Structures are given as C-alpha cells and as structure tokens.
Image (cartoon, rainbow, N blue to C red; front, side, top):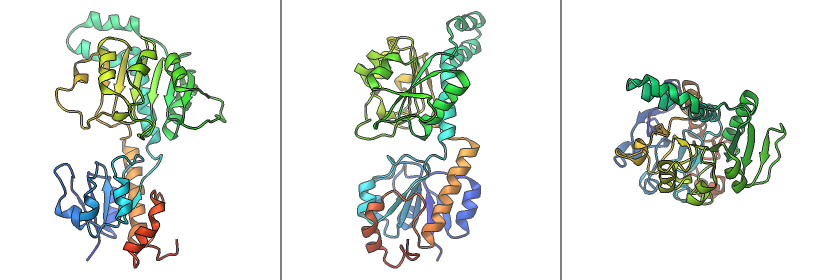
Length: 331
C-alpha cells in the first residue's frame, strides 16, 4: 500500500505529480473537522490550522509540512510530543509578500482603491479630487517591524526604488550591511513612520504588539500595512483609530479571526483596504512553495529528515516512535 499524503488545501499540480510518484495524494480540509483521510495520513501538508487532537488520532502520521514559513497553524508541542516531524518552507514567498506590501504603500499613498470605488459609483469629480490629497513616496519614512526575509526585501524595494528612508525594528540588535536600514526602538519607529509595515512572526512577544497606545504614537497622516498575522494588532484599537481617523488608513491581509467573518467592522471603513490572506500567493510563489513541500515529502517517505526540519529537539521522540523509518540514512 502506498503512503497517503493529505493537503488541507490545493497545491500546485506540478508538485502533486511529484508526490504521486511516491504516494497517494488527496485534498481534505480541516475546517469541518478531521476526516478519515487525515486519520490515515502519513504526511499532511498544512495550509489551514491543525487541531492538536490530530496528533493522537492519526496513528500513521510521520510528518506535517507547512506550505509556507509561519508555524502558528501547527500545535508544535502536540506534534513533538507525538513524535511527528514538523517542517516548513522558509523565505520562498518573501518576495511575493514584500511586493504586496510595497504595492499597498503605493495604493494607500495615492488613494487608488478608494478612488476606484468612488469612480465606479459614477462620481468623476470626487474621485479626481482625491488626487490632490495623494503623496509621493520619495523621502517618506517606512518603518518595518520584523526585518526577516520579507522585511529586508521591502526595505530594498523602498530604498532603491523610491528613495525612502527605512527604519527597522527587530528583536535583536542588527546592522545593515547595505546601509539602507536604521534600526531603532519600536516607539521611535511609530513616531516617525509615514508607513508602518508589520512583517514579524506571531510569538508571545508580538501578540497585540500594536494596540491603542502604539497607534496613538503614530502620525495622523500615517498608514499601517499588516502582512504578519492578525493577532499582532489589537483589532478593536485599530478599528477605533481608523474610524476616528487617528491614522490615515490601513491595508490588511491578515485578521483575527481568520477567515474574516461577514459583517466585519473593517468592511465599512473607506480608509481601509482588505484582502483575504493572499500577500504571499502568486503563480511563481505557489509553485515554488509546493515543489519544496514535494521534495521534502520525498525525503521523509524515503526515511530521511526534511530539508527544513523545524522541531529537531524532538528527534528522540520521533525515532522512538518510528525506529524502523527515520534515520535510515544516518542523518
């Protein structure tokens, strides 16, 4: 019997073909609970949050692989405790996310999406009048919270393409070899930013990092772009700041809860652009992510550890549960 690989959402067909050379493959969402496929799986490709109970219930499960970099969709303690390998695909879609963030910087600064919506309602004059309140980017300050692969790419595009000033906020002190980023404390970044880009991972330290007090430090003319996670921002505080025009606007690709429910408060705010968690999704990035997942699945099913193995500290538990599988190649 071939191993079974289950993905919680679709992946690129080229990767499906590669996986099917070594395993059966199916797509089964976890939104309605665990299915028989999940319980019989050898490997799960993670594109939606997994419930912790999966790791006790799926007795054949050897690995879960995040179709992306962030690990907040995987209950790591449950996976490690059950002797299940966790892997991800870091940095592959960083350029796609960065281009989205910079695109929203342009959109917000020139009020393009609001202008489009106004013109579609037949209001030519009011739409044109918005142009007078638009701003050029040259010389403006973009503050990036979380200067990893995404943040560094945002900095490069903004500095080289628009001659913007770049401030970086990172959990550890850094120096920028390219000399494009000035690292500063969060408070200084908030006070000086014309655009605040959130691209940090979700951790206990970053949950609700941006709340009412932080938003109050920002300029009334400043914009917020969130491509990190919804929980990095206090949603109530942000909605209030946007409704009161305490800040000029926001572009949001991530939410808490997610998916964004119907009747959400952001939908009624004209100074907000919302998208359904798609910043990292392009034809190029989706293929690259999927092919990396497929390659790591081949490694796992051949008895090796994946290239981007995350929970390496759980190796003893993994090999105790699967003594005849993992480590066959002396890795």
